Image (cartoon, rainbow, N blue to C red; front, top):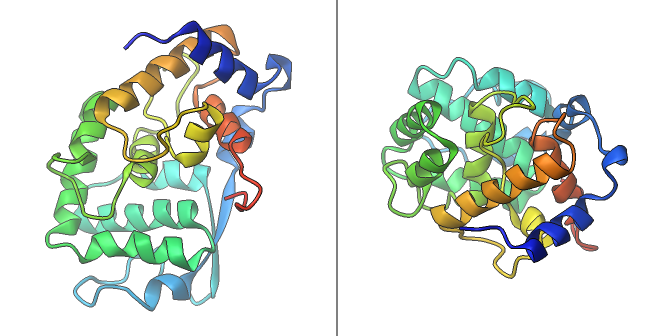
Length: 232
């Protein structure tokens, strides 16, 4: 899908002056606080508690840097569940409602196996192929796990992007969509995610080609903050 000049112009406006762009280190340091009790109180009885929740503290903190590290050695279903929880804890933050929504997919039959298979498939395929694996009819589809969170899985599982990696899987959520001026703010098809990556690729060329593309995603995320929403 071709990127229109209007879409490109609107996105560049949302990004702001190129000289004011943050560094990749700033993006990767983005952290979120979460409450362990929000997770453990509704944890599926059939699953062992993952290491990220096996903590005597009541509050946890996790950053993008931490999640990149966790995404490197995913070799088992237990690894996949631990990674899923860590990523969702970062995304949901202290919100009890968002946390409960993140727990629901783990109650689905075969959830650990599907997560592992999906992450393995995403690791060897393109960003578009990874999206399709978790999308509506994909083999790793889990009820309740939508694009706003499974694109986080794809992003962190792919590792830290470099400035030359112009089609790295990126997070696409409501706030990014709002910043881009999209009417549709959830439930995107694989083709729409592909269009998003096309747009980011062109933004990268015109805005800050010396920085990784997740700086663009992060900047759009901040630009899409609504008055009634928390920062994370």
